Length: 594
Image 1 (cartoon, one colour):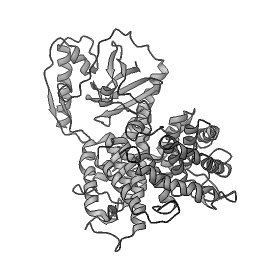
Image 2 (cartoon, one colour):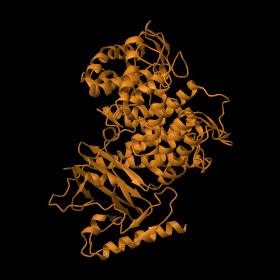
Image 3 (cartoon, helix red, strand yellow):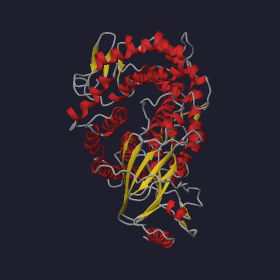
């Protein structure tokens, strides 16, 4: 295609330009550092090219004019020690899986973009009938997954069609104050004849917990998604109507569990203490008035176990924001977590689906069969146990969590599961293994994820159900970021294989492409600390795990291949390290924190 030819010509021109500037050992690699170290000024080459998954990016003097120049500080550091061949082999293997995960996720995204009205940005709940948009499903699950995928593969769509959905939702879907309700996509009128505070509160709590928290953690606080998150959380609590001696609550146990998670993460974002007050109101009720461990039915799964995660998150939040309250919460939380494992953990380490904590019984073993099977949402509950240990330092539940993780490669390597259940199974392994690094779990993930991908059709769609598409995209991105250790290729393209291996303050990165590519490698940062200002990077539902994170204030020794190391600031690495590749070539990068 002509656009591809233009891009190839531009990379060739840039390559020849650097060679003319006297860089003798250019080989496959093109970086801004080479241009900055040249004896003569580089001519400024501009490419304006609309890519399908772009930035709508422009190369200006190989990124100099775009403000993306990396300040390489000449240093006398010795050549980087060469890592063992096994490290590069692992990075290459991860690169192959990264490529497949990104391809799959983006093709799903493109299938949805084809049926979305670009004027509204609203995604239908059903891929086939595409007649309505729902808050709890279209927005909370599917739309948020599309934004997540687009943030890695198609920023043009993210900042265009998908961003437009927030404007449309606020204009047409708000029904009770700022609380939204479901829409008919043909008329943009409400699906339900009468408003319902319960329905709108539930939808908004799902929209916050499953959707807007996830997007905000990835994209930061200065976006319309973060603004909508705050607006909805405020409205939900302002309209709380369930009376208790601790104050008004927004609803029953599932809604309260979701709002505990939302408020506990949100309290430090705008710096408003009302979020802590609201979270503690809910926490007080479920710790001291109606503790879940005294109930006769408690789910350990999605749509049932939200209160367990919520109570652990308010405990984490108060450990810094209100230590005396955290001290009061500690014992009842420990009682709850102990009881959950006492009854709910199977002999092999996995968790059951529903338990009766008061009478010590298992009500349902599996998600689909109460008499057998397992709960593939097991990690939601283990997140709470891990969070407790991180706050207290007790390591009370470490062995139990390790037992669950070790069960995956030991007993579930060929477990028959598909769709949303498969996605949850994998996602929770990724989130917890980010903290524990259990041998065999990554191999289990690589073995299981083709089961998730198997139903994908040639057009990129994954069946008719919204849940199939949302979990497919979300889990594929988690797999891709595991493989790249959080490094993002910008712009992304289908032929890129990006793999990395991190060890302490070091990371080894391999990037390979089939066609010429010029772009940036954007390194991750501590989003849990910088975006939500969390006291700990504890495991939580709908997080994007942090792998190799860069400190903005630190310097890093960066070595391209056999070249002399340079020192690059962390802030520059987060903005993106400029890299260029010729056709059918690769670059290997070693990076160490100074």
